[in-house]
Amino acid sequence: MPVRRRFVLVAAAALAVILAAEGGARVLAPYLSEPARYGDDATAVKVAQMDARGAACTDLVLAGNSMGRDAFAPQAFQEADDQHRLAYNASLDAASPEVLEPWVTREVITRLHPDTVVITLASLDLNASGPATRAAVEAYDGAERTRADLIGRLGAAAGSVSDLVAYRTELRDPAELGAALERRAAGTPAPRPSVTGIPSVLGADGEGLSRRSLHYAGEAGARLFTREQLLKGWSLDAGQVDAARSLIDEVQDAGTDVVLVILPVTDDYIAQHPNGDADFAQFLRVAGSIASDTGADLIDLHDAAPPALFADTHHLNGDGTAWFSAVLAERLDEIGVDRPARCSD
Image (cartoon, rainbow, N blue to C red; front, side, top):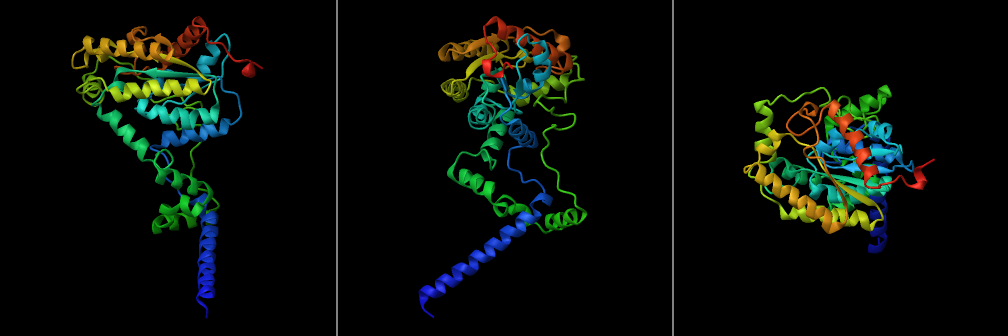
């Protein structure tokens, strides 16, 4: 048999095997467990929520870390807002500017096309040695759908068109395969990220729910966590500052207004910095320079919330969420951020 003909037959046989495997993967896909495409379940849910909103009008998006996630309730904001702006909370746990830059520019704006992006900022976001912040950056950069290198982009692209690629890990797991076959026999698809959120954790508009019922009373454990996990060895991270400036510039270049909000914190939070007030004052100066350098409007709420509105040293509780959402609407009006005509009907 000629070599060329043999090659064609082998290639055809290989293609047939691949197509058969792809067909089998597509049959089983609805019953296989959701692959870990993002850094955590909350990120996957937020992507599903934003995809579901689709072409629906979104006037404003707020993005920050878990403080922003817990502070901002879009429905409460809309009800308190004289302009009734439609909003979404795209904040991610421990998301510093290094995470927000790719998240907002590549994932959020491309899906929601908001007219205004509110970026929240806290001193912990700019800590060069914060363990929680560094872990969040590594998780985001290492996840299949959010890693920025060539292998990540190719993997994400292939997984979007091929179930054999998308579910490659699950298909190699005998236990997972068995469970998928049982689900298929029962007609019960595997759970998927829900646009309704995560019970007691995340709401339908991306808002945080887990701290709504809490009230901070100066607990030593809360102060210790803040000191050791968030503000340990606090020093200004030039890379995070540059990322914040780049984020604002990129969003503005896309024709979107940016408002920078310094989040409210307790006196106990400020005291956990190695140099207390001096470190926090440095943070405030840098936040002000970021706003002035980029031309973004700045709203400083760091000392505006009463102690009763906090769940711990720096997260707001349910009463704090209602307060922040209403105050943000008021401050946006004061600085002249208007609802665009396209969303006014």
